[in-house]
Image 1 (cartoon, rainbow, N blue to C red):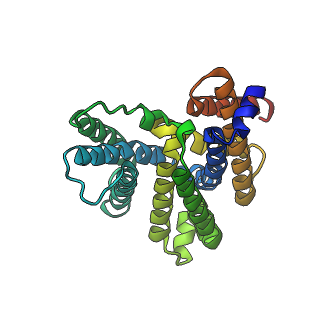
Image 2: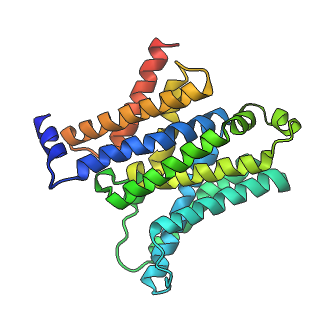
Length: 277
């Protein structure tokens, strides 16, 4: 424990401070967006978006290796593009073409991963996808902290300004439509917000684990809170607590922080289910 505190306050090694700060900043977006996702039953959709991100990452790395990236795109830009494209595809097919949304979500989920792995296979040199799949929280930089801050402000601002409208489409879309709300626009905005949140959280816990941290804190908080605003606040607190404690345990046990955070959230959820049924 003393080693952890010394490393935490050592000015020459900011990685632990950045990791904890990233966990707190991410908790704001996780708590708010996760509440909408769980309430609107969009968990599988968020999972499809998160896994499709690998396609954009692999595409940008492939272009860069071939000298075909004059705009200087980074894997983050590719991830954002892939997530938004996935959200648009799911939105159009489910709302306008009237396709089976569950099948579309599964197809986007699998195809995004497959496209990413193909591009990585054709990228010269060794490209380890593990950092994208499971995150590298201890390598969070100041630039990524800034990105997390921007997303947190965007998510918080959107939720405050459009809270009643988003609340309406989450709980009763037919009622929202009767009240002449722009249901399709609000649904698309929710998808895009979810996509951006997922992308910015990938450096923390990775593509595979991000969906768990998006939902588990909300599932824990909803055992204590019923109103949506208090559910969001409770989810933010739970997510911050599990992130910080997970970083501590990962440092002491020399384990990957993303995996420890998810296992800690899962343990907390099981304990809550047992004693708060």
